[in-house]
Image 1 (cartoon, one colour):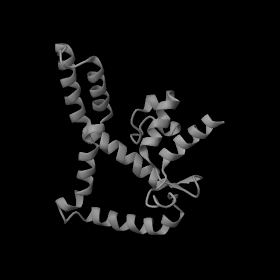
Image 2: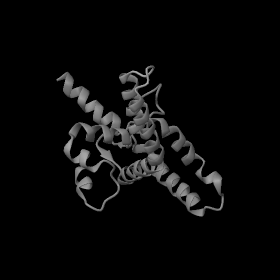
Image 3: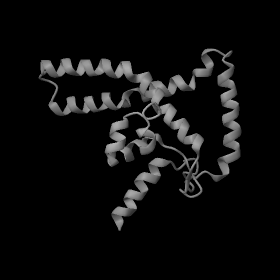
Image 4: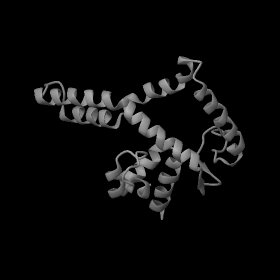
Length: 170
């Protein structure tokens, strides 16, 4: 991830400077991508990494205007120092605005309904077909939870935080 962030004209990574400099931010970023793991946490598929990086960039771009708008609203609230808003509530609101957590659901809905907007978008249909073929081919090697949570797929989030927990135990 660091090498990719160091490439000057590469737009696949958001927050390049933070990823290169801050190991804790880098871990959180990789965990937030939730890249599926394979072969008992020993492998990630290139296509999954590429897909999640692309999704992150597109989602960030999709929400950029709304995040900027909400930042301006927060500045106004802070300038007015509204009596009902404590510094703690403003800082929590600012964190949600900057991280874009409030917009994830809207982005998910837009992605889910993308093919519904125009059935003539042949590229989306081709992409769905190819994705299902790849999923069928590699689904037996993917790391899944044991019953009763067998539908849960282990991701980079489990890999990053699992290693930190084990290191803490030692």
